Image 1 (tube, helix red, strand yellow):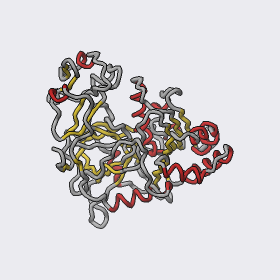
Image 2: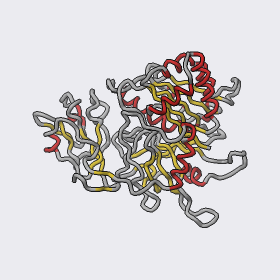
Image 3: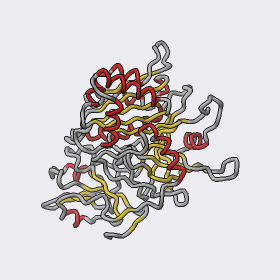
Image 4: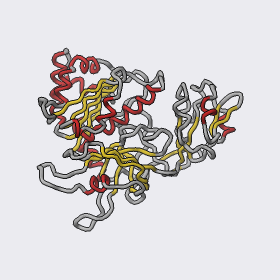
Length: 411
């Protein structure tokens, strides 16, 4: 296999990390398919028997069971018995299907303007695969969930949509995006071009062990000037039913990635559907934290803005996150009975905490949301830095050079 080229023909295999496993036999006892076995050295999972349902994941005390790889040929039980450590995420060369499409590059260029263009990824980020599926050769995903996140009757209609890729390999990382190809043609008879959506799930799947991911979609009902419009892609996605199929391209993104080393702090600032990559990163950390994993990571702070509580995606789940896990600061600009507040106002209110994070060389900054948030967030950073003996512009440049400052904003 070594040196061969495979384009989107990999399989997802569930494995057990021999370096972390304590051989407690819990996974073998709970596996309903009897796919897990062991010898005197290692525990192994039979690919032919494993259904990826994930019954074995929660009981594992170390997280050794939470290991998945993209493979062209499944590792046999006998091979797994001989391992001292897990193999790399595929020992074959995985190439993209060609250059990133021009329209995707244009969208990405606009989105990253606030960071000064494309930036370096965090030094400990996992290797991203990009553009495995193109408009000419898209992946086909099945809708397995479509849930409205905002309250019925709220002026903002935002959906959490889960797409399942079946047996097709679609490796992605937190912070990456996928392209959606809406059916039909535009007013000139041309096929609709791709719309990008940030992945809202951690890399092991929206449901651990399943080959799926979620996106956060806001139904577009007006343009930037307030005129009524019908968003082609957003309406298509929000109206999908379970069982419908969707054409998907990507994944895309090589720099807006989360760090993987233990001690890394995340400072996340977002509005609306800009919460998607933040949810992916937070959920990745939450699952590790829930298992008590030592490598769960450093501290996390989230500044999240919307007009009202009813229009804030993931409002309910955010309220359940422990303070010891993440510092969540919510800002509402149109909440009845409250003064207007934006994310930059919450940042200033938590200036000491923000300054502490900015002074820490292990802090990584992520900003995502509407373009209009950029100036306010930048001004807040300047004020906080000035009050704490820092120069924001100098610090921002340093963060960019070290892969620790990432911005993706949109109109």
